[in-house]
Image (cartoon, rainbow, N blue to C red; front, side, top):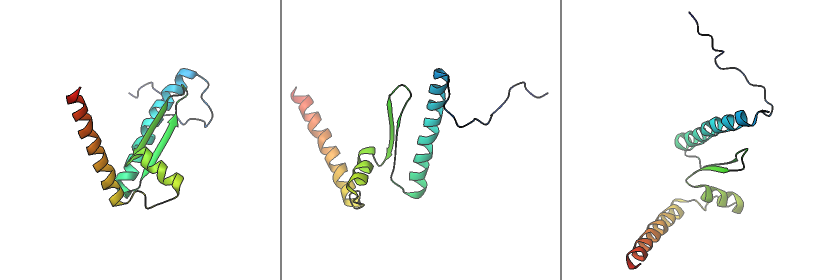
Length: 108
């Protein structure tokens, strides 16, 4: 005997009037959007960034290799910024910063 649920329904592409429903839809779709961006990065080696502001004005972002790196490349228009050597330099800087923070914590 089939259930009494309506199942997945096609939604009209218009703003959801109920604020609570709009927030729930945003959260679910944001997760799906970030998952698709991650899959695009993994499968194709693409550098992706997604920035979304919720109806409550919170900012959510996903970026691979990082939001900052992709945005900097976009703004500068320089496709060589994220080369292999730039990634190595960025990784080295991150490790060095962590080392210095550990030293600072030990001294404090």
